[in-house]
Length: 353
Picture 1: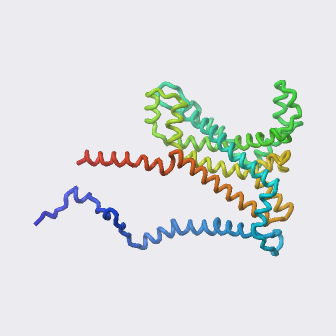
Picture 2 (picture 1 turned 45 degrees about the vertical axis):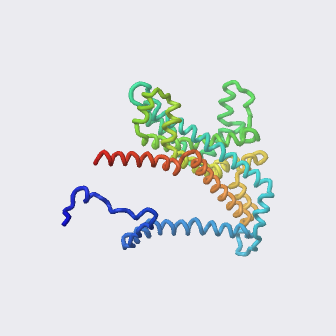
């Protein structure tokens, strides 16, 4: 008769998994599991369906009507609003403007934010351990301050600074001897209106993302930077080879949020150039939607614009995820790391026996 006294090895051994190629065993639905799924999956799913999915479906329906917004009467017009939209030169101009904002604002903002974050957290003395600059907390507060101010206030302040007659910007430039900026209309010239708006949006958002990246960099193991420093890597090389890959998920999330903000950009633009700027050079889809709905009382047509804006936003987010996946981020990177992790675990088990 075999000895059935359990040993330490048999006690710590886990049950054998299902045979390879066989179906995994299903766990029984207990009361605890059911309540867990209802609380952490059912409730969020219900909130998403009620407050996101159903309103979006309703928007698609109203976008196919000629609803005026202030009466219960409407006619179903099918895709006429969407056809009309893509034949509307003003809407197409607004679509190009938001595409321009989505292309430049996230890229410039995140580049500046990353530079500020790296300088604050890793820009200390080159000798000794890797550390940030002196007074890093002060610089974090200063960089974050513009984000604390409401966007509408930021837009109104910069609208006054861009004023061609009494604006601070022209006054400073004129004081420096640049007399041709005496009455220069930054928001009234087609060549400078959009860059001026972009600058304000970037100025208002860069501090928040700098603080976000500072928190992400703080989570990177210091041994990586110490090893790079021993190998002779400079600050730029360390940023490209260590910092960026380590905070890749944070950069992806920030890029998506910034892209959504740039595609909307209603508050900043409406505060500075409510009329769409010269030749509609700063007009956004949100502004066009607002004017069509409340000035022309074409709520069905405006709702169709909102549906297109939502689709454009989803496409932008999908492109960011796709680029991140194709360049080695996300699940692809995890899968490449998995074999090495399994090998290390196998070696550890072998050494423990």
